Image 1 (cartoon, rainbow, N blue to C red):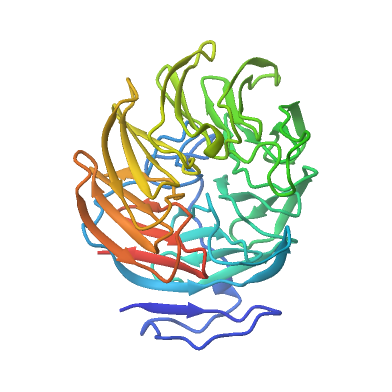
Image 2 (cartoon, one colour):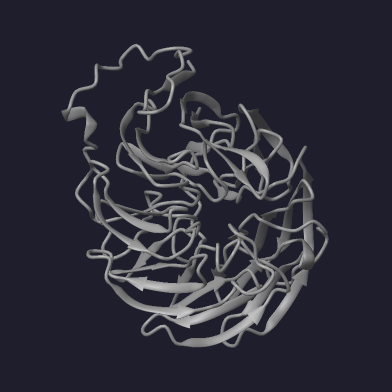
Length: 417
């Protein structure tokens, strides 16, 4: 049964529900609190059995747990609020889940921010709204969970720390510009980038700034809404990696914010870096439309792959010796992660901005053609595709074979066998 859980939010019109769950109980004050398990994941926002941050771990190499169904079906969908505004003279509607807007999952709940202006806590199995938190702008990136607190940025410039049980604010930190970057916590420290050009390290308990390092990307030629660093930082072995509007890939010492080295991709790079073994991988936009492999020790370029001439907004997935990345050329590309040589390419009906997940021998990702795809990771053969209500630019959250993903046209979906 497909469930359309539409909600009434202050200032927004309610829409009629398409169906109802037979076992939904009336909401009460007690049920508006998420009954989260006691935190057992130590001093970081990553775990082997939960999805606590964008791409699952600080290196961006954990993509979920299976078994993933060969033909996922819609179990429920939830309608989000909408913001209408004008960007550079063009009327825009913002809703659903944004680019990089991956849900996170802990216990019986999933949490997702929406460009429509709210963070939502939903029951993972039913889509029932537990609580919502209204921001001053759009929540475009992913949240991270740490010690049962939720950390997420907004275009109102604030990094928020929310009580994940209630959605109440614990603290805020003003970064000075839009905050599309997704945070992560490693060894009890919170890391994030931002469009004001700074890498930041904060105390997750208090929001106190420990250090910040200027990376740039806000000089002549940048435009509002695309400045500084929109990437989500990757952290590995005491190193912080993030990339800027100018294409500068920084390696920063997490102890004190000292820059160790920087390399360059040649263009604005919004896709987040991925660390695997001795290498860091990156993918740039259309002026330098390449996937890159850099040596972690000094930033030396090892290889570049350039079959896509339209650019990359999808963060690569590295699994074993394969790299998977979506392109604005309407294709998902599979490369040899060691050499950068093409292994296979799969063509969809529109651009692929969704960052692919590799779970259970399958590649799962969305496309702007409104389909969620499941491919065989080894061969690239299509296993199935599922059409949703509109273009998909967000990335899947996958736990125990269940999939949560949003479209850019208004809905968050729960999918399963």
